[in-house]
Image 1 (spheres, rainbow, N blue to C red):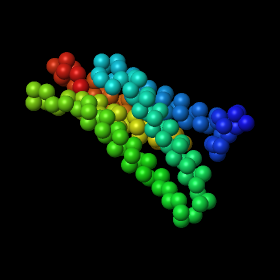
Image 2 (image 1 turned 135 degrees about the vertical axis):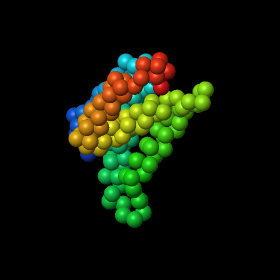
Image 3 (image 1 turned 180 degrees about the vertical axis):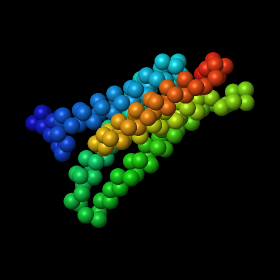
Image 4 (image 1 turned 30 degrees about the vertical axis):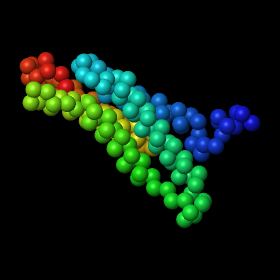
Length: 159
């Protein structure tokens, strides 16, 4: 009885659940590693947690939609609200990171990377692996490219 509480009830096979959650965390680790290597705020741990949370919300949302799909018009489920809630929540986190100092905006890229990690987590949690992988690779590439081309004096002023 207790085992069914922890292992039953999901339409998603357990290995797929693990793959989606771990995959989201690992893909977002790519983004976080680039941030961490450049000594920027919101590094490895933060990006992994944002991606993992987004993937978890995606899995929960699809499970709830499936669970209540036979209830008819009495229960209305809209999975697009997940995207709205995630973007609003991550925007709140990102806005808290962005500051104005000496007439310059700081941490804007950090906020954008958090937003990207949430999108990667949402894609992985939804099983949209081509989107999740491509977004992670492109995000990592953009971060590395920016670090390579920006002027030396700007490198001293970390965002």
